[in-house]
Length: 300
Image (cartoon, rainbow, N blue to C red; front, side, top):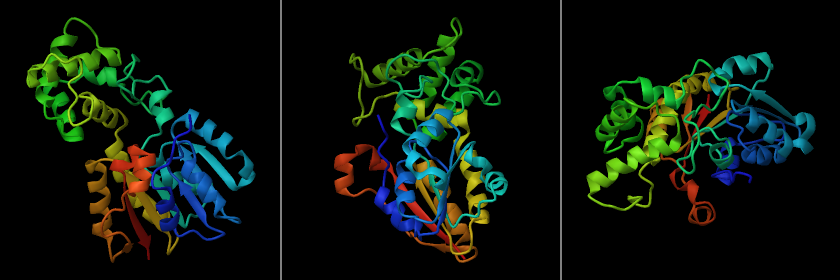
């Protein structure tokens, strides 16, 4: 299965590509955006970054025909500045797509999805011993700390009850798998909604959606990474270059919006006053694009 990139045409248009553009794709994934970018830069180059080793291997396969026009780096895009310095790569366009591909969530076996039964890992870079796994967070953090993660990172309405239930369950048993966490969340929802339904869906979403999102953000320190990379991206961009960012939830979008607003008319111009969202045609083909928001900044 190959992931379908969101807002593909909008990304290409707003990167403002030229034949000789030098582009950084900070979140390579399945190379859907990168492939289209390379199609449009006949004499240019692309530097693709991804922290997931399997994503880099897949991208190399998908971009095989582009030969030496693409440079691949397995690293966290938080290290963008040192990466471009090491590769002597001076970009005039940078893309940061904060979404994660379907294969990365469903084919890695790391506990990203609440479907099935997998170890509660959730690290994008599973070899990074400096990051605590989701299981470690669930079993070691206090009830108050867990509640804060669920509330702040996902606006989970039953965050307090879920945190309390987790602490109760772990007292006699270490939480290790996604199915254990899912059952805890479902039991809270059944109790709060006074229902006996096996899965009490709310507004078309599985009750565990937000808890899994919050844990993934906490494990990978996603918001900290985003706050680090934005100023570095502007710094390494060539004059007149563009930074395009796609976010998928309000926390990310708020960080990007405020950053662009704070540097607007100082370090460049905010091209998008309001975020660009998916067209109705794209939503019919790819419903996962419904929450995607694209913002663009052009450096002076």
